[in-house]
Image (cartoon, rainbow, N blue to C red; front, top):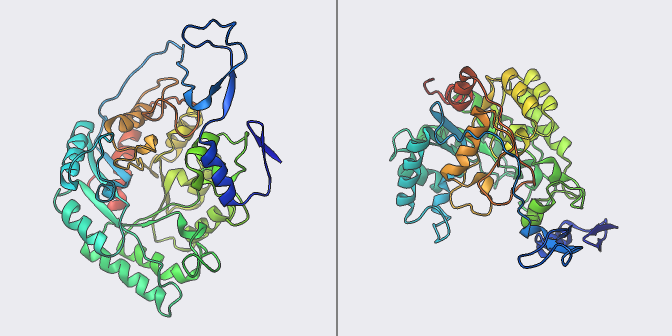
Length: 413
C-alpha cells in the first residue's frame, strides 16, 4: 500500500483510479509548519498544518541578478504551439485578447521586443487546419512563422497506407509545410484501431516510407517521445513531480497499460539509426534531460539526431555545470525551443508571454544563481530553482538561431 497524507492507496490501482485520486487531492497535501499566521504567535501555531498549495517561501539569499529582457542574438523558437490561438480564445485572465488576428499581432509585437525572429508552429495537421495556418499565419506575416505538418494515422490498417502517407508529406511540403511533427501519442497511446487493439510501435516498418520521404524532401522530423522520468514512476510521496501530476493527473503514464520509457526511447533511436539521411529533432532534450550523459551518448552515436530544450529549464538549470558541458560538447546539435502555447495559463513553464522567454534568456546568457524557471508564484514542475550557464557568444548564436536555420534552410546570423 502507498500512503498520501496518511491515506492509503492500493499499489495496484488502475490509471483511471489513480488519476481520480490525484484530481481529488489537487495539491491539498499538508506539511508541518512552525510559522505563525498573522496575529498568532509561534507558540500558538506550533504543529499547525499548512496546505502545500499555500506554501510560497521567499528566498533569503542575496545574489546578483542580471535580468535579460531581450535575447542577445536573433532567436528561432523551433518549438511552439502558436496556432492554439485558433482554439484557445483569450479570456479576461489571459495575456492575449481579441480575435485570432489581433492575438497574432500582439505575439509579433512581443517577438520584436524579445528579438525573436521566427516561431515554428507544431499545432497543425495535414488538412484544413494546415491550410488555414499557411494562409492566415505563415503567408500573412511573411517569414515570422513556419508550420509543421502532423501526419494522420487514422487509416493505418488500410492497404497502401505507407505509400499514401509518404505522398501526403510531399503534398504538405508543396503547400508550404517546413517540417514534420510527431506527437507523443505515437508509441505511447496510439492503437491500431484508434483506441482499441495493440499499441502502434514507433519503429513499425509501415512508417519507413514516411521517414525516408522526409529525408528526400529535406524536412526535419520534430519528434516527441515519452515524457519526464517522473511521469513513468509511481505517483507517491517519493515522486519529485507529485504536485505537477496532482494538477495534471492525465500526465501520468505509470502502469502496465503503457510501455516503459526506456522501451519508447529505444524504439525512437532505432528509427533514427535506420534512416541516417533524415534529420530528427528529439524534443525536450530528447526527453531525457534527467540523464545528460545518456543523451550525450545518443548524439555521439547518431549523426542525424538533434535535440531542443523546450519546457526543460527545470531539469537543465538545476545541473548547471553538467548542462554547460552538454551545450559545449553538442553546440551544433541543440536548438532553442520553448513549447510556447498562447493562453496556456495552466502550464506557466510554457505560456507564451515575454516573461517566459526571459527565463530562457537568463538561463542561457547569465551565471545568475537560484532563480525561477517559469513566471509563476509556485514552480510548476517541481519545487526547485535554477542556475544560469552563461554560454559564450559563439555557442549562443548556434543555439538561438543557426542550428535551427541550418535544418530549416534559412540564413545564419
